[in-house]
Image (tube, rainbow, N blue to C red):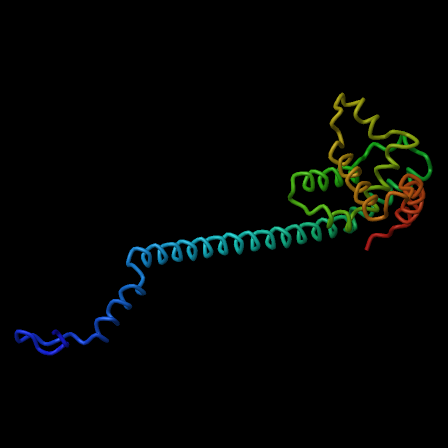
Length: 210
Protein backbone atom coordinates (compact mmCIF):
# COMPACT_ATOMS: atom_id res chain seq x y z
CA UNK A 1 0.00 0.00 0.00
CA UNK A 2 1.33 3.39 -1.01
CA UNK A 3 0.49 5.98 1.56
CA UNK A 4 2.65 8.83 0.41
CA UNK A 5 5.65 7.79 2.58
CA UNK A 6 9.23 7.50 1.34
CA UNK A 7 9.40 4.76 -1.30
CA UNK A 8 12.80 3.56 -2.52
CA UNK A 9 14.42 6.58 -1.00
CA UNK A 10 12.31 9.07 -2.89
CA UNK A 11 10.70 12.00 -1.14
CA UNK A 12 6.98 12.13 -1.75
CA UNK A 13 5.61 15.10 -3.70
CA UNK A 14 3.08 16.97 -1.61
CA UNK A 15 -0.34 16.76 -3.17
CA UNK A 16 -1.04 20.42 -2.51
CA UNK A 17 2.02 21.52 -4.49
CA UNK A 18 1.24 19.30 -7.45
CA UNK A 19 -2.31 20.56 -7.55
CA UNK A 20 -1.28 24.18 -7.39
CA UNK A 21 1.21 23.74 -10.24
CA UNK A 22 -1.45 22.16 -12.45
CA UNK A 23 -3.92 24.95 -11.67
CA UNK A 24 -1.29 27.63 -12.25
CA UNK A 25 -0.44 26.14 -15.65
CA UNK A 26 -4.07 25.97 -16.65
CA UNK A 27 -4.77 29.58 -15.63
CA UNK A 28 -1.58 31.23 -16.91
CA UNK A 29 -1.93 33.05 -20.32
CA UNK A 30 0.00 31.66 -23.22
CA UNK A 31 3.00 33.69 -24.44
CA UNK A 32 1.62 33.99 -27.99
CA UNK A 33 -1.61 35.55 -26.80
CA UNK A 34 0.29 38.06 -24.65
CA UNK A 35 2.50 39.01 -27.61
CA UNK A 36 -0.52 39.54 -29.89
CA UNK A 37 -2.29 41.65 -27.29
CA UNK A 38 0.80 43.83 -26.80
CA UNK A 39 1.23 44.29 -30.55
CA UNK A 40 -2.39 45.31 -31.01
CA UNK A 41 -2.23 47.78 -28.15
CA UNK A 42 1.00 49.29 -29.46
CA UNK A 43 -0.43 49.66 -32.97
CA UNK A 44 -3.64 51.20 -31.62
CA UNK A 45 -1.67 53.68 -29.52
CA UNK A 46 0.49 54.63 -32.52
CA UNK A 47 -2.60 55.21 -34.69
CA UNK A 48 -4.19 57.31 -31.93
CA UNK A 49 -1.08 59.47 -31.68
CA UNK A 50 -0.92 59.85 -35.48
CA UNK A 51 -4.59 60.81 -35.77
CA UNK A 52 -4.27 63.25 -32.90
CA UNK A 53 -1.21 64.86 -34.49
CA UNK A 54 -2.95 65.23 -37.86
CA UNK A 55 -6.05 66.70 -36.20
CA UNK A 56 -3.92 69.20 -34.27
CA UNK A 57 -2.03 70.24 -37.41
CA UNK A 58 -5.30 70.62 -39.33
CA UNK A 59 -6.74 72.81 -36.56
CA UNK A 60 -3.60 74.96 -36.49
CA UNK A 61 -3.72 75.44 -40.27
CA UNK A 62 -7.40 76.39 -40.13
CA UNK A 63 -6.79 78.94 -37.37
CA UNK A 64 -3.81 80.36 -39.27
CA UNK A 65 -5.84 80.65 -42.48
CA UNK A 66 -8.69 82.38 -40.67
CA UNK A 67 -6.32 84.87 -39.02
CA UNK A 68 -4.58 85.58 -42.33
CA UNK A 69 -7.95 86.11 -44.00
CA UNK A 70 -9.08 88.46 -41.24
CA UNK A 71 -5.88 90.49 -41.51
CA UNK A 72 -6.24 90.71 -45.29
CA UNK A 73 -9.87 91.84 -45.04
CA UNK A 74 -8.94 94.52 -42.49
CA UNK A 75 -6.12 95.70 -44.77
CA UNK A 76 -8.50 95.93 -47.73
CA UNK A 77 -11.03 97.79 -45.60
CA UNK A 78 -8.36 100.33 -44.63
CA UNK A 79 -7.52 100.80 -48.28
CA UNK A 80 -11.20 101.25 -49.14
CA UNK A 81 -11.48 103.92 -46.43
CA UNK A 82 -8.29 105.73 -47.46
CA UNK A 83 -8.60 109.38 -48.57
CA UNK A 84 -7.88 108.47 -52.19
CA UNK A 85 -10.63 105.86 -52.34
CA UNK A 86 -13.09 108.04 -50.45
CA UNK A 87 -12.67 110.68 -53.19
CA UNK A 88 -13.21 108.05 -55.89
CA UNK A 89 -16.32 106.71 -54.16
CA UNK A 90 -17.68 110.24 -53.75
CA UNK A 91 -17.22 111.07 -57.47
CA UNK A 92 -18.78 107.81 -58.59
CA UNK A 93 -21.76 108.15 -56.25
CA UNK A 94 -22.40 111.72 -57.38
CA UNK A 95 -22.34 110.68 -61.04
CA UNK A 96 -24.73 107.81 -60.45
CA UNK A 97 -27.17 109.91 -58.42
CA UNK A 98 -27.22 112.65 -61.07
CA UNK A 99 -27.67 110.13 -63.88
CA UNK A 100 -24.41 111.08 -65.61
CA UNK A 101 -23.73 107.52 -66.63
CA UNK A 102 -22.06 108.52 -69.90
CA UNK A 103 -19.43 110.43 -67.93
CA UNK A 104 -18.53 107.41 -65.81
CA UNK A 105 -15.40 106.01 -67.40
CA UNK A 106 -13.27 105.45 -64.34
CA UNK A 107 -14.21 102.14 -62.74
CA UNK A 108 -11.60 102.10 -59.97
CA UNK A 109 -14.20 101.39 -57.29
CA UNK A 110 -15.55 98.48 -59.34
CA UNK A 111 -11.98 97.29 -59.94
CA UNK A 112 -11.44 97.24 -56.18
CA UNK A 113 -14.37 94.86 -55.79
CA UNK A 114 -13.10 92.84 -58.73
CA UNK A 115 -9.95 92.24 -56.68
CA UNK A 116 -11.93 91.39 -53.55
CA UNK A 117 -14.09 89.01 -55.57
CA UNK A 118 -11.08 87.28 -57.07
CA UNK A 119 -9.43 86.80 -53.66
CA UNK A 120 -12.69 85.51 -52.19
CA UNK A 121 -13.45 83.22 -55.13
CA UNK A 122 -10.00 81.63 -54.89
CA UNK A 123 -10.41 80.99 -51.17
CA UNK A 124 -7.82 83.48 -49.94
CA UNK A 125 -10.49 85.50 -48.13
CA UNK A 126 -13.20 84.11 -45.89
CA UNK A 127 -16.61 84.62 -47.53
CA UNK A 128 -18.46 85.51 -44.34
CA UNK A 129 -15.83 88.08 -43.36
CA UNK A 130 -16.03 89.69 -46.81
CA UNK A 131 -19.81 89.79 -46.57
CA UNK A 132 -19.58 91.47 -43.17
CA UNK A 133 -16.96 94.01 -44.29
CA UNK A 134 -18.16 94.92 -47.82
CA UNK A 135 -21.64 93.47 -48.36
CA UNK A 136 -23.51 96.79 -48.44
CA UNK A 137 -21.13 98.40 -50.93
CA UNK A 138 -20.94 95.31 -53.13
CA UNK A 139 -24.72 95.17 -53.52
CA UNK A 140 -25.08 98.92 -53.85
CA UNK A 141 -22.37 99.67 -56.36
CA UNK A 142 -22.94 96.60 -58.51
CA UNK A 143 -26.68 97.29 -58.79
CA UNK A 144 -26.09 100.99 -59.49
CA UNK A 145 -23.57 100.16 -62.22
CA UNK A 146 -25.99 97.74 -63.93
CA UNK A 147 -29.33 99.59 -63.64
CA UNK A 148 -30.93 101.69 -65.00
CA UNK A 149 -27.88 102.10 -67.27
CA UNK A 150 -25.56 99.12 -67.66
CA UNK A 151 -22.19 100.80 -67.22
CA UNK A 152 -20.38 97.48 -66.78
CA UNK A 153 -22.10 95.98 -69.83
CA UNK A 154 -21.08 99.04 -71.86
CA UNK A 155 -17.46 98.60 -70.78
CA UNK A 156 -17.60 94.96 -71.85
CA UNK A 157 -18.95 95.87 -75.28
CA UNK A 158 -16.44 98.64 -75.87
CA UNK A 159 -13.49 96.46 -74.92
CA UNK A 160 -14.89 93.30 -76.55
CA UNK A 161 -14.20 91.52 -73.29
CA UNK A 162 -17.20 89.79 -71.66
CA UNK A 163 -15.12 88.96 -68.58
CA UNK A 164 -14.67 92.54 -67.41
CA UNK A 165 -15.78 92.70 -63.78
CA UNK A 166 -16.83 89.06 -63.79
CA UNK A 167 -15.38 88.51 -60.30
CA UNK A 168 -17.28 91.58 -59.08
CA UNK A 169 -20.42 89.99 -60.53
CA UNK A 170 -19.64 86.70 -58.79
CA UNK A 171 -19.10 88.57 -55.51
CA UNK A 172 -22.45 90.33 -55.88
CA UNK A 173 -24.23 86.98 -56.33
CA UNK A 174 -22.40 85.60 -53.29
CA UNK A 175 -23.52 88.55 -51.15
CA UNK A 176 -27.11 88.08 -52.36
CA UNK A 177 -26.93 84.37 -51.49
CA UNK A 178 -25.68 85.06 -47.96
CA UNK A 179 -28.32 87.79 -47.55
CA UNK A 180 -31.06 85.28 -48.40
CA UNK A 181 -29.62 82.77 -45.97
CA UNK A 182 -29.36 85.29 -43.14
CA UNK A 183 -32.67 87.09 -43.74
CA UNK A 184 -34.84 84.14 -44.78
CA UNK A 185 -36.53 83.12 -48.01
CA UNK A 186 -39.58 85.30 -47.37
CA UNK A 187 -37.50 88.51 -47.30
CA UNK A 188 -37.75 90.61 -50.48
CA UNK A 189 -34.07 90.91 -51.44
CA UNK A 190 -34.72 92.76 -54.70
CA UNK A 191 -36.82 95.50 -53.10
CA UNK A 192 -34.41 95.85 -50.22
CA UNK A 193 -31.45 96.13 -52.59
CA UNK A 194 -33.06 98.97 -54.55
CA UNK A 195 -33.72 100.93 -51.36
CA UNK A 196 -30.25 100.16 -50.08
CA UNK A 197 -28.66 101.40 -53.31
CA UNK A 198 -30.24 104.85 -53.07
CA UNK A 199 -29.38 105.30 -49.39
CA UNK A 200 -25.83 104.03 -49.92
CA UNK A 201 -25.20 106.40 -52.85
CA UNK A 202 -26.47 109.35 -50.81
CA UNK A 203 -24.07 108.52 -48.01
CA UNK A 204 -21.18 108.03 -50.42
CA UNK A 205 -21.88 111.31 -52.21
CA UNK A 206 -21.19 113.34 -49.07
CA UNK A 207 -18.00 111.54 -48.06
CA UNK A 208 -15.11 113.72 -46.97
CA UNK A 209 -11.48 112.60 -47.14
CA UNK A 210 -10.11 112.02 -43.67
